[in-house]
Amino acid sequence: MARATAARRQTQVPKTKEQKATDKAAAKREFDKALKISNRENVPVKEPAVVPIEGSAGHSAIIAVSLIKPSAENPRTHFDEAALKELGESLIQGQVCPLVVRRINDSEFELIDGERRWRAARMVGIVSLRAEIRECTEAEAALLRLVSFQRQDLSPIEEARGLQLMVQKYEVSQRELAAKLKVSQGHIGNRLRLLKLPDTWQSRVISGEITATQARELATWADLPNVLERLHELLEDGDDWNVALVDALEDLSEPVEGYLYREGVNITLTFTDEQLAQLDVRDVPNRWQTGTNRRAFNDNLYQELTAKLIEKKKKKVTSKQSKEVEADQAKPAKSQAEKTKELLSRVAKWKARWNQLVVAEWFKTEATTFDCVGLFAFASVQREGIRVFTSLEEAWPVAFGKKMDSRKDETQVYSAVRDIKDVEKLRILAAGLIQHGELSPWRMISPKALEHFAELAAINWSDKWIQFATRADDWLESLLRLFQVEQLEALNKEWRLAATGTNKAILIADMVNRFRESKKVPAMPSIVLKASAKDVTSW
Image (cartoon, rainbow, N blue to C red; front, side, top):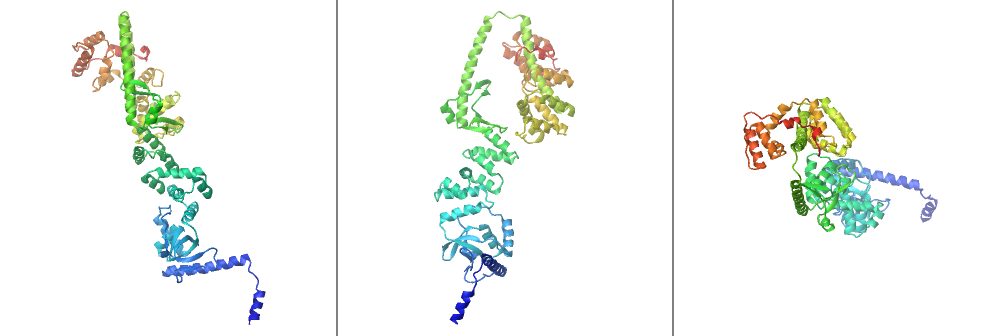
Protein backbone atom coordinates (compact mmCIF):
# COMPACT_ATOMS: atom_id res chain seq x y z
CA MET A 1 0.00 0.00 0.00
CA ALA A 2 2.78 2.38 1.02
CA ARG A 3 4.75 1.26 -2.07
CA ALA A 4 1.76 2.16 -4.31
CA THR A 5 1.32 5.60 -2.70
CA ALA A 6 4.99 6.34 -3.21
CA ALA A 7 4.69 5.32 -6.86
CA ARG A 8 1.75 7.69 -7.38
CA ARG A 9 3.70 10.56 -5.85
CA GLN A 10 6.60 9.87 -8.19
CA THR A 11 4.34 9.88 -11.23
CA GLN A 12 2.49 13.21 -10.26
CA VAL A 13 3.40 16.14 -12.54
CA PRO A 14 3.84 19.61 -10.82
CA LYS A 15 1.13 22.14 -11.80
CA THR A 16 2.07 25.00 -14.07
CA LYS A 17 1.39 28.68 -13.19
CA GLU A 18 -1.56 28.72 -15.61
CA GLN A 19 -3.11 25.67 -13.94
CA LYS A 20 -2.65 27.20 -10.49
CA ALA A 21 -4.33 30.42 -11.67
CA THR A 22 -7.23 28.42 -13.15
CA ASP A 23 -7.70 26.52 -9.90
CA LYS A 24 -7.59 29.74 -7.91
CA ALA A 25 -10.23 31.38 -10.15
CA ALA A 26 -12.47 28.32 -9.81
CA ALA A 27 -12.10 28.45 -6.02
CA LYS A 28 -13.03 32.13 -6.05
CA ARG A 29 -16.15 31.46 -8.13
CA GLU A 30 -17.23 28.78 -5.69
CA PHE A 31 -16.64 31.16 -2.78
CA ASP A 32 -18.59 34.03 -4.41
CA LYS A 33 -21.46 31.63 -5.12
CA ALA A 34 -21.51 30.50 -1.49
CA LEU A 35 -21.23 34.11 -0.29
CA LYS A 36 -24.20 35.27 -2.42
CA ILE A 37 -26.34 32.44 -1.09
CA SER A 38 -25.26 33.21 2.45
CA ASN A 39 -25.98 36.93 2.18
CA ARG A 40 -29.33 36.34 0.48
CA GLU A 41 -30.35 34.01 3.30
CA ASN A 42 -28.85 36.40 5.91
CA VAL A 43 -26.67 33.71 7.53
CA PRO A 44 -22.88 33.38 7.73
CA VAL A 45 -21.16 31.27 5.09
CA LYS A 46 -19.53 29.03 7.68
CA GLU A 47 -18.74 28.88 11.34
CA PRO A 48 -16.65 30.29 12.92
CA ALA A 49 -17.13 33.97 11.94
CA VAL A 50 -13.58 34.18 10.51
CA VAL A 51 -12.95 31.57 7.84
CA PRO A 52 -9.50 31.47 6.13
CA ILE A 53 -9.60 31.13 2.34
CA GLU A 54 -7.47 28.22 1.22
CA GLY A 55 -5.04 28.87 -1.60
CA SER A 56 -5.34 32.67 -1.49
CA ALA A 57 -2.33 34.97 -1.71
CA GLY A 58 -1.47 36.57 1.66
CA HIS A 59 -3.77 36.23 4.65
CA SER A 60 -7.35 36.34 3.32
CA ALA A 61 -10.50 35.27 5.07
CA ILE A 62 -14.27 35.54 5.11
CA ILE A 63 -15.05 37.80 8.09
CA ALA A 64 -18.40 38.59 9.67
CA VAL A 65 -19.26 42.28 9.10
CA SER A 66 -20.06 42.65 12.81
CA LEU A 67 -16.42 41.90 13.71
CA ILE A 68 -15.04 44.71 11.53
CA LYS A 69 -14.75 48.24 12.99
CA PRO A 70 -14.09 51.47 11.07
CA SER A 71 -10.92 53.33 11.97
CA ALA A 72 -11.17 56.64 13.83
CA GLU A 73 -8.20 57.74 11.73
CA ASN A 74 -9.98 57.29 8.42
CA PRO A 75 -9.74 60.72 6.71
CA ARG A 76 -12.93 60.09 4.72
CA THR A 77 -15.90 61.65 6.54
CA HIS A 78 -18.40 62.16 3.71
CA PHE A 79 -20.40 59.14 2.53
CA ASP A 80 -23.19 59.55 -0.03
CA GLU A 81 -26.20 57.48 1.05
CA ALA A 82 -27.53 56.91 -2.47
CA ALA A 83 -24.11 55.78 -3.71
CA LEU A 84 -23.76 53.42 -0.73
CA LYS A 85 -27.11 51.81 -1.47
CA GLU A 86 -26.15 51.28 -5.11
CA LEU A 87 -22.82 49.79 -4.02
CA GLY A 88 -24.63 47.48 -1.59
CA GLU A 89 -26.84 46.12 -4.37
CA SER A 90 -23.76 45.34 -6.45
CA LEU A 91 -22.15 43.55 -3.48
CA ILE A 92 -25.16 41.23 -3.28
CA GLN A 93 -24.30 40.14 -6.83
CA GLY A 94 -20.67 39.45 -5.85
CA GLN A 95 -17.70 41.07 -4.15
CA VAL A 96 -14.91 41.99 -6.56
CA CYS A 97 -12.31 43.59 -4.29
CA PRO A 98 -11.57 42.41 -0.76
CA LEU A 99 -11.49 44.73 2.23
CA VAL A 100 -8.11 45.39 3.82
CA VAL A 101 -8.10 45.04 7.61
CA ARG A 102 -5.70 44.58 10.51
CA ARG A 103 -6.32 42.47 13.59
CA ILE A 104 -7.02 44.43 16.81
CA ASN A 105 -7.55 41.38 19.03
CA ASP A 106 -8.77 37.81 18.73
CA SER A 107 -12.32 38.85 17.82
CA GLU A 108 -12.07 42.32 16.18
CA PHE A 109 -10.57 43.82 13.04
CA GLU A 110 -9.95 47.44 12.08
CA LEU A 111 -10.56 48.68 8.54
CA ILE A 112 -7.60 49.94 6.54
CA ASP A 113 -9.31 50.15 3.16
CA GLY A 114 -12.94 49.59 2.14
CA GLU A 115 -15.12 51.51 4.59
CA ARG A 116 -17.56 52.42 1.79
CA ARG A 117 -18.02 48.72 0.96
CA TRP A 118 -18.35 47.86 4.67
CA ARG A 119 -21.03 50.54 5.18
CA ALA A 120 -22.84 49.46 2.00
CA ALA A 121 -22.85 45.81 3.15
CA ARG A 122 -24.41 46.75 6.48
CA MET A 123 -27.01 48.88 4.71
CA VAL A 124 -28.31 45.99 2.55
CA GLY A 125 -27.95 43.28 5.22
CA ILE A 126 -24.82 41.45 4.03
CA VAL A 127 -23.31 39.60 7.02
CA SER A 128 -19.91 38.43 5.70
CA LEU A 129 -17.24 39.95 3.44
CA ARG A 130 -13.95 38.77 2.02
CA ALA A 131 -10.99 40.63 3.52
CA GLU A 132 -7.22 40.67 3.33
CA ILE A 133 -5.64 40.68 6.81
CA ARG A 134 -2.49 42.78 7.09
CA GLU A 135 0.01 42.58 9.90
CA CYS A 136 0.96 46.26 10.43
CA THR A 137 1.31 49.04 12.98
CA GLU A 138 -1.06 52.01 13.34
CA ALA A 139 1.37 54.26 11.46
CA GLU A 140 1.72 51.76 8.61
CA ALA A 141 -2.08 51.39 8.48
CA ALA A 142 -2.50 55.18 8.26
CA LEU A 143 -0.03 55.33 5.36
CA LEU A 144 -1.77 52.42 3.60
CA ARG A 145 -5.06 54.33 3.81
CA LEU A 146 -3.52 57.37 2.14
CA VAL A 147 -2.01 55.24 -0.62
CA SER A 148 -5.35 53.54 -1.29
CA PHE A 149 -7.25 56.85 -1.20
CA GLN A 150 -5.04 58.23 -3.99
CA ARG A 151 -6.99 55.92 -6.30
CA GLN A 152 -10.37 57.06 -4.97
CA ASP A 153 -12.48 60.21 -5.02
CA LEU A 154 -11.29 61.55 -1.66
CA SER A 155 -11.98 65.27 -1.17
CA PRO A 156 -8.96 67.63 -0.78
CA ILE A 157 -9.87 68.34 2.86
CA GLU A 158 -10.16 64.64 3.72
CA GLU A 159 -6.81 64.02 2.05
CA ALA A 160 -5.32 66.92 4.01
CA ARG A 161 -6.57 65.45 7.30
CA GLY A 162 -4.94 62.14 6.48
CA LEU A 163 -1.67 63.89 5.67
CA GLN A 164 -1.85 65.93 8.87
CA LEU A 165 -2.29 62.74 10.88
CA MET A 166 0.92 61.32 9.42
CA VAL A 167 2.87 64.54 10.02
CA GLN A 168 1.65 65.32 13.54
CA LYS A 169 0.84 61.98 15.19
CA TYR A 170 3.35 59.71 13.46
CA GLU A 171 6.03 62.41 12.94
CA VAL A 172 6.59 61.70 9.25
CA SER A 173 8.18 64.70 7.50
CA GLN A 174 6.53 66.25 4.46
CA ARG A 175 9.50 65.21 2.35
CA GLU A 176 9.26 61.55 3.46
CA LEU A 177 5.51 61.58 2.97
CA ALA A 178 5.84 63.00 -0.55
CA ALA A 179 8.35 60.27 -1.43
CA LYS A 180 6.14 57.47 -0.09
CA LEU A 181 3.02 58.77 -1.82
CA LYS A 182 4.92 59.65 -5.02
CA VAL A 183 3.66 63.26 -5.07
CA SER A 184 5.51 66.59 -4.85
CA GLN A 185 6.31 68.17 -1.52
CA GLY A 186 4.46 71.27 -2.76
CA HIS A 187 1.30 69.18 -3.14
CA ILE A 188 1.60 68.07 0.50
CA GLY A 189 2.10 71.67 1.67
CA ASN A 190 -0.82 72.97 -0.40
CA ARG A 191 -3.15 70.33 0.99
CA LEU A 192 -2.12 70.97 4.60
CA ARG A 193 -2.75 74.72 4.16
CA LEU A 194 -6.41 73.96 3.47
CA LEU A 195 -6.81 72.97 7.13
CA LYS A 196 -6.32 76.63 8.12
CA LEU A 197 -9.88 77.24 6.91
CA PRO A 198 -12.74 77.21 9.45
CA ASP A 199 -14.85 74.04 9.63
CA THR A 200 -17.74 75.64 7.70
CA TRP A 201 -15.49 76.36 4.72
CA GLN A 202 -13.85 72.91 4.95
CA SER A 203 -17.34 71.41 4.70
CA ARG A 204 -17.88 73.39 1.48
CA VAL A 205 -14.75 71.83 0.00
CA ILE A 206 -15.82 68.31 1.03
CA SER A 207 -19.27 68.81 -0.52
CA GLY A 208 -17.73 70.16 -3.73
CA GLU A 209 -19.29 73.62 -3.33
CA ILE A 210 -15.86 75.20 -3.83
CA THR A 211 -12.84 73.69 -5.59
CA ALA A 212 -9.46 72.85 -4.10
CA THR A 213 -7.90 75.72 -6.05
CA GLN A 214 -10.43 78.19 -4.63
CA ALA A 215 -9.93 76.77 -1.13
CA ARG A 216 -6.14 77.10 -1.42
CA GLU A 217 -6.57 80.73 -2.52
CA LEU A 218 -8.95 81.36 0.38
CA ALA A 219 -6.61 79.75 2.93
CA THR A 220 -4.32 82.78 2.52
CA TRP A 221 -7.03 84.87 4.21
CA ALA A 222 -8.15 82.29 6.79
CA ASP A 223 -6.90 84.49 9.66
CA LEU A 224 -9.32 87.28 8.65
CA PRO A 225 -12.80 86.03 9.68
CA ASN A 226 -14.48 89.26 8.58
CA VAL A 227 -13.22 88.66 5.02
CA LEU A 228 -14.64 85.12 5.06
CA GLU A 229 -17.99 86.41 6.35
CA ARG A 230 -18.14 89.10 3.65
CA LEU A 231 -17.22 86.56 0.97
CA HIS A 232 -20.02 84.26 2.18
CA GLU A 233 -22.53 87.15 1.87
CA LEU A 234 -21.41 87.99 -1.68
CA LEU A 235 -21.52 84.35 -2.81
CA GLU A 236 -25.01 84.02 -1.33
CA ASP A 237 -26.02 86.99 -3.51
CA GLY A 238 -24.90 85.03 -6.58
CA ASP A 239 -21.58 86.77 -7.29
CA ASP A 240 -18.85 85.03 -9.27
CA TRP A 241 -16.09 83.57 -7.05
CA ASN A 242 -13.22 85.78 -8.31
CA VAL A 243 -15.34 88.93 -8.26
CA ALA A 244 -16.70 88.15 -4.79
CA LEU A 245 -13.24 87.44 -3.33
CA VAL A 246 -11.73 90.69 -4.66
CA ASP A 247 -14.79 92.67 -3.50
CA ALA A 248 -14.63 91.12 -0.03
CA LEU A 249 -10.94 91.96 0.30
CA GLU A 250 -11.34 95.51 -1.00
CA ASP A 251 -14.41 96.16 1.17
CA LEU A 252 -12.41 95.36 4.30
CA SER A 253 -9.06 96.94 3.45
CA GLU A 254 -7.60 100.30 2.45
CA PRO A 255 -4.93 101.32 -0.11
CA VAL A 256 -1.45 102.20 1.15
CA GLU A 257 -0.08 103.58 -2.12
CA GLY A 258 -1.07 106.45 -4.38
CA TYR A 259 -3.52 109.20 -3.43
CA LEU A 260 -6.61 109.44 -1.25
CA TYR A 261 -9.29 112.14 -1.47
CA ARG A 262 -11.08 112.77 1.82
CA GLU A 263 -12.63 115.72 3.63
CA GLY A 264 -12.00 118.03 0.71
CA VAL A 265 -8.25 117.41 0.41
CA ASN A 266 -6.12 115.10 -1.71
CA ILE A 267 -3.38 113.38 0.32
CA THR A 268 -0.39 111.31 -0.76
CA LEU A 269 -0.33 108.01 1.13
CA THR A 270 3.05 107.75 2.84
CA PHE A 271 3.81 105.35 5.71
CA THR A 272 6.99 104.25 7.47
CA ASP A 273 8.13 100.62 7.38
CA GLU A 274 7.12 100.25 11.03
CA GLN A 275 3.63 101.62 10.29
CA LEU A 276 3.25 99.32 7.28
CA ALA A 277 4.05 96.32 9.47
CA GLN A 278 1.44 97.42 12.04
CA LEU A 279 -1.14 98.08 9.31
CA ASP A 280 -1.11 94.39 8.32
CA VAL A 281 -0.37 95.17 4.67
CA ARG A 282 -0.93 92.35 2.20
CA ASP A 283 -0.96 91.86 -1.56
CA VAL A 284 -4.56 91.72 -2.81
CA PRO A 285 -5.33 90.48 -6.37
CA ASN A 286 -6.69 93.23 -8.56
CA ARG A 287 -10.06 93.11 -10.26
CA TRP A 288 -8.61 92.07 -13.63
CA GLN A 289 -6.46 89.23 -12.22
CA THR A 290 -3.36 90.81 -13.78
CA GLY A 291 -1.45 91.70 -10.62
CA THR A 292 -1.80 92.72 -6.99
CA ASN A 293 -2.32 95.89 -4.95
CA ARG A 294 -0.92 96.49 -1.47
CA ARG A 295 -3.73 97.10 1.01
CA ALA A 296 -3.98 97.51 4.80
CA PHE A 297 -6.29 95.33 6.91
CA ASN A 298 -5.79 97.11 10.26
CA ASP A 299 -8.62 99.58 9.75
CA ASN A 300 -8.45 101.33 13.15
CA LEU A 301 -4.78 102.22 12.78
CA TYR A 302 -5.29 103.17 9.12
CA GLN A 303 -8.02 105.69 10.00
CA GLU A 304 -5.83 107.13 12.75
CA LEU A 305 -2.80 107.57 10.48
CA THR A 306 -4.75 108.97 7.52
CA ALA A 307 -6.53 111.43 9.85
CA LYS A 308 -3.12 112.84 10.76
CA LEU A 309 -2.16 113.08 7.07
CA ILE A 310 -5.44 114.87 6.30
CA GLU A 311 -4.95 117.34 9.17
CA LYS A 312 -1.41 118.05 8.02
CA LYS A 313 -2.60 118.63 4.44
CA LYS A 314 -5.42 120.92 5.59
CA LYS A 315 -2.96 123.11 7.48
CA LYS A 316 -0.75 123.25 4.40
CA VAL A 317 -3.71 124.16 2.17
CA THR A 318 -4.89 126.83 4.62
CA SER A 319 -1.42 128.33 4.74
CA LYS A 320 -1.20 128.32 0.95
CA GLN A 321 -4.63 129.96 0.62
CA SER A 322 -3.64 132.66 3.10
CA LYS A 323 -0.55 133.41 1.07
CA GLU A 324 -2.62 133.52 -2.13
CA VAL A 325 -5.06 135.96 -0.51
CA GLU A 326 -2.19 138.17 0.56
CA ALA A 327 -0.70 137.98 -2.93
CA ASP A 328 -4.08 138.84 -4.50
CA GLN A 329 -4.49 141.81 -2.20
CA ALA A 330 -1.08 143.06 -3.26
CA LYS A 331 -2.02 142.85 -6.95
CA PRO A 332 -3.64 145.81 -8.72
CA ALA A 333 -7.43 145.63 -9.00
CA LYS A 334 -8.76 143.67 -11.99
CA SER A 335 -10.76 145.39 -14.69
CA GLN A 336 -14.46 144.64 -15.11
CA ALA A 337 -13.71 142.79 -18.37
CA GLU A 338 -11.21 140.50 -16.63
CA LYS A 339 -13.67 139.76 -13.83
CA THR A 340 -16.42 138.95 -16.36
CA LYS A 341 -14.08 136.64 -18.30
CA GLU A 342 -13.12 134.75 -15.14
CA LEU A 343 -16.77 134.42 -14.11
CA LEU A 344 -17.65 133.16 -17.59
CA SER A 345 -14.98 130.45 -17.28
CA ARG A 346 -16.23 129.37 -13.85
CA VAL A 347 -19.84 129.28 -15.02
CA ALA A 348 -18.84 127.30 -18.15
CA LYS A 349 -17.31 124.60 -15.94
CA TRP A 350 -20.41 124.56 -13.74
CA LYS A 351 -22.61 124.34 -16.84
CA ALA A 352 -20.56 121.38 -18.10
CA ARG A 353 -21.41 119.48 -14.89
CA TRP A 354 -25.06 120.45 -15.35
CA ASN A 355 -24.87 119.23 -18.97
CA GLN A 356 -23.49 115.92 -17.70
CA LEU A 357 -26.58 115.38 -15.52
CA VAL A 358 -29.03 116.52 -18.21
CA VAL A 359 -27.46 114.41 -20.98
CA ALA A 360 -27.29 111.34 -18.70
CA GLU A 361 -30.98 111.78 -17.86
CA TRP A 362 -31.85 112.09 -21.56
CA PHE A 363 -30.00 108.87 -22.40
CA LYS A 364 -31.78 107.12 -19.53
CA THR A 365 -35.31 108.15 -20.57
CA GLU A 366 -35.46 109.15 -24.23
CA ALA A 367 -32.49 107.79 -26.21
CA THR A 368 -33.07 105.25 -28.97
CA THR A 369 -31.09 102.05 -29.52
CA PHE A 370 -29.22 103.85 -32.31
CA ASP A 371 -28.25 106.69 -29.92
CA CYS A 372 -26.95 104.26 -27.29
CA VAL A 373 -24.98 102.12 -29.73
CA GLY A 374 -23.51 105.30 -31.21
CA LEU A 375 -22.32 106.38 -27.75
CA PHE A 376 -20.70 102.98 -27.12
CA ALA A 377 -19.00 103.15 -30.53
CA PHE A 378 -17.71 106.62 -29.64
CA ALA A 379 -16.41 105.33 -26.30
CA SER A 380 -14.66 102.34 -27.88
CA VAL A 381 -12.27 104.55 -29.89
CA GLN A 382 -11.30 106.94 -27.06
CA ARG A 383 -8.49 104.78 -25.63
CA GLU A 384 -9.84 105.18 -22.13
CA GLY A 385 -10.52 101.49 -21.51
CA ILE A 386 -10.20 101.43 -17.73
CA ARG A 387 -12.27 104.59 -17.19
CA VAL A 388 -15.01 103.45 -19.55
CA PHE A 389 -14.93 99.98 -17.99
CA THR A 390 -15.32 101.51 -14.50
CA SER A 391 -18.29 103.63 -15.62
CA LEU A 392 -20.04 100.60 -17.12
CA GLU A 393 -19.23 98.59 -14.01
CA GLU A 394 -21.10 101.20 -11.90
CA ALA A 395 -24.19 101.01 -14.12
CA TRP A 396 -24.23 97.25 -14.75
CA PRO A 397 -25.95 96.20 -11.47
CA VAL A 398 -28.73 98.76 -12.10
CA ALA A 399 -29.41 97.28 -15.53
CA PHE A 400 -28.97 93.56 -14.76
CA GLY A 401 -29.31 93.24 -10.98
CA LYS A 402 -25.80 91.79 -10.59
CA LYS A 403 -22.20 92.90 -10.89
CA MET A 404 -20.36 92.81 -14.17
CA ASP A 405 -17.78 90.05 -14.63
CA SER A 406 -14.57 91.98 -13.98
CA ARG A 407 -12.48 89.33 -15.77
CA LYS A 408 -13.75 90.53 -19.17
CA ASP A 409 -11.50 92.82 -21.18
CA GLU A 410 -12.65 95.89 -23.14
CA THR A 411 -13.37 93.96 -26.34
CA GLN A 412 -15.51 91.39 -24.51
CA VAL A 413 -17.42 94.15 -22.67
CA TYR A 414 -18.24 96.05 -25.87
CA SER A 415 -19.21 92.79 -27.56
CA ALA A 416 -21.57 92.00 -24.67
CA VAL A 417 -23.10 95.50 -24.88
CA ARG A 418 -23.67 95.19 -28.64
CA ASP A 419 -25.58 91.96 -28.08
CA ILE A 420 -28.09 93.60 -25.70
CA LYS A 421 -31.51 93.88 -27.34
CA ASP A 422 -33.42 95.45 -24.44
CA VAL A 423 -33.45 99.22 -25.07
CA GLU A 424 -34.13 99.96 -21.38
CA LYS A 425 -30.93 98.17 -20.34
CA LEU A 426 -29.00 99.96 -23.10
CA ARG A 427 -30.31 103.29 -21.84
CA ILE A 428 -29.22 102.54 -18.28
CA LEU A 429 -25.70 101.60 -19.43
CA ALA A 430 -25.42 104.66 -21.71
CA ALA A 431 -26.61 106.95 -18.91
CA GLY A 432 -24.09 105.35 -16.55
CA LEU A 433 -21.31 105.89 -19.06
CA ILE A 434 -22.11 109.62 -19.10
CA GLN A 435 -22.95 110.04 -15.41
CA HIS A 436 -19.97 108.13 -13.96
CA GLY A 437 -17.42 109.29 -16.52
CA GLU A 438 -14.62 111.65 -15.50
CA LEU A 439 -15.51 115.17 -16.66
CA SER A 440 -12.43 116.82 -18.13
CA PRO A 441 -11.47 118.65 -21.36
CA TRP A 442 -8.95 115.85 -21.97
CA ARG A 443 -11.33 112.94 -21.41
CA MET A 444 -14.15 111.31 -23.35
CA ILE A 445 -16.74 113.14 -21.18
CA SER A 446 -15.50 116.63 -22.02
CA PRO A 447 -17.50 119.89 -21.94
CA LYS A 448 -17.33 120.03 -25.74
CA ALA A 449 -18.55 116.44 -26.15
CA LEU A 450 -21.44 117.06 -23.73
CA GLU A 451 -22.50 120.15 -25.70
CA HIS A 452 -22.46 117.98 -28.84
CA PHE A 453 -24.62 115.31 -27.15
CA ALA A 454 -27.03 117.98 -25.89
CA GLU A 455 -27.33 119.39 -29.40
CA LEU A 456 -28.04 115.94 -30.87
CA ALA A 457 -30.67 115.40 -28.20
CA ALA A 458 -32.27 118.77 -29.02
CA ILE A 459 -32.49 119.59 -25.31
CA ASN A 460 -34.74 122.54 -24.43
CA TRP A 461 -32.65 124.46 -21.90
CA SER A 462 -35.53 126.68 -20.81
CA ASP A 463 -37.49 123.63 -19.67
CA LYS A 464 -34.37 122.16 -18.05
CA TRP A 465 -33.81 125.43 -16.17
CA ILE A 466 -37.29 125.26 -14.68
CA GLN A 467 -36.66 121.65 -13.60
CA PHE A 468 -33.29 122.70 -12.20
CA ALA A 469 -34.82 125.57 -10.25
CA THR A 470 -37.13 123.19 -8.37
CA ARG A 471 -34.34 120.83 -7.25
CA ALA A 472 -34.04 120.42 -3.52
CA ASP A 473 -30.24 120.06 -3.46
CA ASP A 474 -27.51 122.70 -3.38
CA TRP A 475 -27.00 123.08 -7.13
CA LEU A 476 -28.39 126.63 -7.18
CA GLU A 477 -26.16 127.56 -4.26
CA SER A 478 -23.15 126.06 -6.05
CA LEU A 479 -23.90 128.34 -9.02
CA LEU A 480 -24.22 131.47 -6.90
CA ARG A 481 -20.92 130.78 -5.12
CA LEU A 482 -19.15 131.35 -8.45
CA PHE A 483 -20.12 135.04 -8.40
CA GLN A 484 -18.27 137.87 -6.67
CA VAL A 485 -20.31 140.07 -4.28
CA GLU A 486 -20.82 142.85 -6.82
CA GLN A 487 -21.77 140.24 -9.48
CA LEU A 488 -24.28 138.68 -7.04
CA GLU A 489 -25.84 142.09 -6.46
CA ALA A 490 -26.22 142.51 -10.22
CA LEU A 491 -27.88 139.06 -10.50
CA ASN A 492 -30.08 139.96 -7.50
CA LYS A 493 -31.38 142.92 -9.46
CA GLU A 494 -31.76 140.86 -12.67
CA TRP A 495 -33.95 138.37 -10.79
CA ARG A 496 -35.71 141.09 -8.76
CA LEU A 497 -35.31 139.15 -5.55
CA ALA A 498 -34.54 142.10 -3.26
CA ALA A 499 -32.25 139.84 -1.19
CA THR A 500 -29.93 141.37 1.39
CA GLY A 501 -26.87 140.29 3.35
CA THR A 502 -23.89 141.67 5.22
CA ASN A 503 -21.51 139.26 3.51
CA LYS A 504 -21.43 136.89 0.54
CA ALA A 505 -22.61 133.77 2.41
CA ILE A 506 -25.64 135.53 3.95
CA LEU A 507 -26.52 137.15 0.63
CA ILE A 508 -26.42 133.79 -1.18
CA ALA A 509 -28.60 132.13 1.49
CA ASP A 510 -31.22 134.91 1.21
CA MET A 511 -31.16 134.78 -2.60
CA VAL A 512 -31.70 130.99 -2.54
CA ASN A 513 -34.67 131.31 -0.16
CA ARG A 514 -36.32 134.10 -2.15
CA PHE A 515 -35.64 132.23 -5.43
CA ARG A 516 -37.48 129.15 -4.17
CA GLU A 517 -40.35 131.20 -2.76
CA SER A 518 -40.90 133.07 -6.06
CA LYS A 519 -44.26 132.36 -7.68
CA LYS A 520 -42.59 132.52 -11.07
CA VAL A 521 -39.20 130.90 -11.61
CA PRO A 522 -36.63 133.62 -12.43
CA ALA A 523 -35.17 133.33 -15.90
CA MET A 524 -31.88 131.62 -16.58
CA PRO A 525 -29.04 134.12 -15.98
CA SER A 526 -27.75 135.53 -19.22
CA ILE A 527 -24.19 134.51 -18.35
CA VAL A 528 -25.29 130.85 -17.92
CA LEU A 529 -27.02 130.95 -21.29
CA LYS A 530 -23.92 132.47 -22.86
CA ALA A 531 -21.27 130.22 -21.27
CA SER A 532 -19.92 127.35 -23.41
CA ALA A 533 -17.00 124.93 -23.50
CA LYS A 534 -14.77 127.38 -25.36
CA ASP A 535 -14.96 129.81 -22.42
CA VAL A 536 -13.16 127.39 -20.06
CA THR A 537 -9.71 128.92 -19.53
CA SER A 538 -8.48 126.44 -16.91
CA TRP A 539 -9.62 123.14 -15.39
